[in-house]
Image 1 (tube, rainbow, N blue to C red):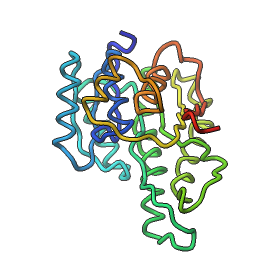
Image 2: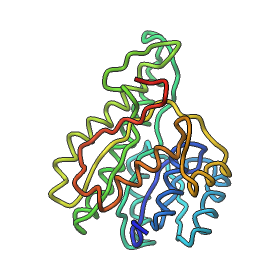
Image 3: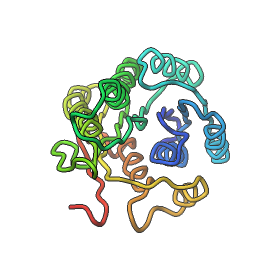
Image 4: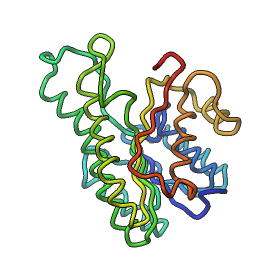
Length: 247
């Protein structure tokens, strides 16, 4: 398998969205997984059991990804368990809450920025030293479709959430070319809105592939490619993943 011998840390991997599908897909491709969750240990253990059924090793680690110290400790725990962390996927993010700009409370604004920007900062900062030392690494952030030129507003969409996604795009475009000489790629994928799926359905798509309208598995397959050796020369990219009704 393409990622045999690699270790992937995936944040926000216990829910019903992209993070879980990404973790399952990277495990399908041969990677051992550091499975991050914030509060629901039971769901994390369900996902871990599926990963183990693939014949892969998994470390479940609770961490608030908005806290750079907690993220640093998670990376260190992964390195202690597996010896290295080769892949870091920043999936956990902020809260989608459409509201007029003047109605956004400072606390909510900061929470969204922590969820989107601080979480990406903390993960990249913690993962880079080990990747530089080994001369190989893959960092992928989940951004957002059209976040750089956001055309929506309430009630169709929030105004703070896409700003955080656009910051992730900026990090990919800025840091990706800088780290490429170190054997590290940094990219972002930018999907549109995606419905959550049950674990059984997610597992079916991992094995059979995605079809129809955009699903978490469509995103997971792109992330898996970006983590592979054939994508070694793709760095600094923001890859849109569009639904059938998006232009």
